[in-house]
Length: 167
Image (cartoon, rainbow, N blue to C red; front, top):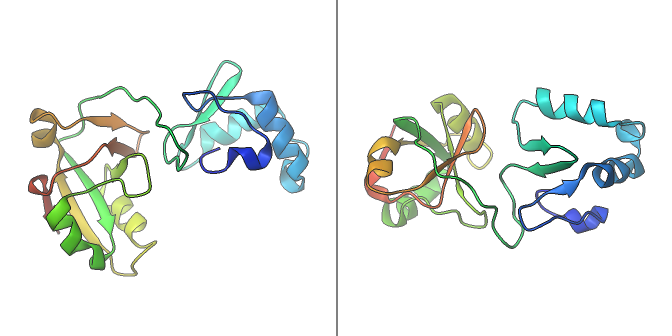
């Protein structure tokens, strides 16, 4: 749902929602561990997922963040924690110091509540990632919009370099 819904013949509305029955049918057609999946099991999988990337509302389901699809999900700005973190490859630091954090091929910049989670994310691109500390409260006070992604992830349109420190 986050990247190639058409591959599974899923139709998303303008806010990224799909019909749960369509999703269940697509998952069952994939077979394997999904071949007997029902609505209650899907709800349990989503509720207990470590990364909490999906949400259910009534008969609809959507990915909460992380889309690489055209268009943009509407988010409601919220006051972030005072400090957030971003893990990144060391080779990206020079560019980040110049441009700040930008979403690149994503819809939003992904930030973490904890240094540990940010470091883990950074390890996907660098075995010894750089850790950036984001002065989210100051950025928010200056008008930078932040959005709650889930209990661990916060999102932003962009974060100027002046709100970032390394370490």
